[in-house]
Structure formats: structure tokens, C-alpha cells
Image (cartoon, helix red, strand yellow):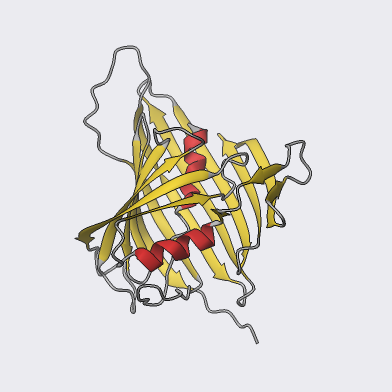
Length: 268
């Protein structure tokens, strides 16, 4: 289950932005947000003898900070409690920190995974563009990686999505490395729909448009033609995400925005 949970963070980077127009460069704003995690409804027919997820609950906290135009820093914490069809509970906690240089040339990250309060994995990574895109893992015996030149980082991926949110293209495909699965990158297909959703005015703060466009994403690895998971996001023209849904082979999760606030930095 944890190998799926780690992948939540790819598009948890969706954040608060100033209004943009097609082909303009988005200007991101520093923010903090909180999402409520729950098990999504399912019509799947259950097979005898197979273990299923019966309940899921928790919270995702995201900080996304512009480090005075030098880099983008994100700190994320996701805590989720699962109860399976045998009544057995598991508490999963994932902490993820990212520092991506503003021009997309370098990225540092730390990934920490716990299960029932015990550390399962801790990975420190550094990715930098030289002649090739190189990923190293300091203080670890993990082998260094060489990735294709057209692999991009999460901030650059977010910018590409926002440029196309109200454009004429209905699908874009990108290669993205963000470190939640340290030895692999994702091939992500993004589908732009015309469907619009709204949320409660009690959640949306002043200056945030309550009009969210539905986009759909499929995540692939290697040469596989079958996505390892799919994601639905409700995103407004300012870049605020009010809703995530993650569809995995055996269960689905929904994350709904509970709270969002801006962070003012003094860069003088």
C-alpha cells in the first residue's frame, strides 16, 4: 500500500497562483493548505478471500514557499489511517520536503515514510542538470541515476499545466521526476476537460475564484501501456486545487480542501 501512497505528492504541488492567460508565465504565491483524506465510493465487486480497504481517513498538509525568487520550497505531511476488510488498522505517515531551483536546473528532496510510527524508509536525493540529468543519493547506498534530458521537475510541470489550463490543447504529456519513487520518473498524460465545479464559500478565501476546472491525469512508468494510477484534480484559473481523487487498482482516495492561507515573505 505504501508504494501507492508515496505517489500522492506529484500533484500535491498544485498551489495558489495569480490569474494567468494562455502562454503567459504563472506567478506563484507562497501558501499553506490542508486537505481531508477519505476513502472514495466504489462499485467494485469483492472477491471471496481477498483483502480490501474498508476505511481510510486522514489529512494532508502542504507548504509551498517562494524562496525570494531563488527556489521553490515545499514541505508536505500526509497522515492516513487504513482499516482493511479484516478489521486490521494501519497508520501511514509520509513527510516530503523539496527545494527546486527556480530555473529548473536543480532539485533536492527528502522523503520519509513511517508505518505505525516506525520508520520504513528515508531517502535524501539531489537531481541536477549537467550534460545529463543526474540524480544522486547522499548518505545512501542507492545507485546514481541518469535520466532523459526532457525529464522535468514538479515546479516546471505545474507551470506547463497552468499554461494549458484554458488553452486549445486537450492533452499534454510530460516526463516528471519528483523523488517519491526515488529510482523512477513518471510519464504523465494530462487531459483537460470542460467540466466546472464549485466549493463552499466558507473554504475559499478572498481573492480566490470559486470556479474549478476538472482535469484528469494518468501516471505511467517505463514502457508500460497501463497506468499505475490515475488522478482527478479540480483546478481554478489561479492554480488553486479544491479536490483530488486518486484511483488505484484496488481502491480510490479523495482529498478535499479544508483550509488555505497565504504566506507573506520579507525578501528585502
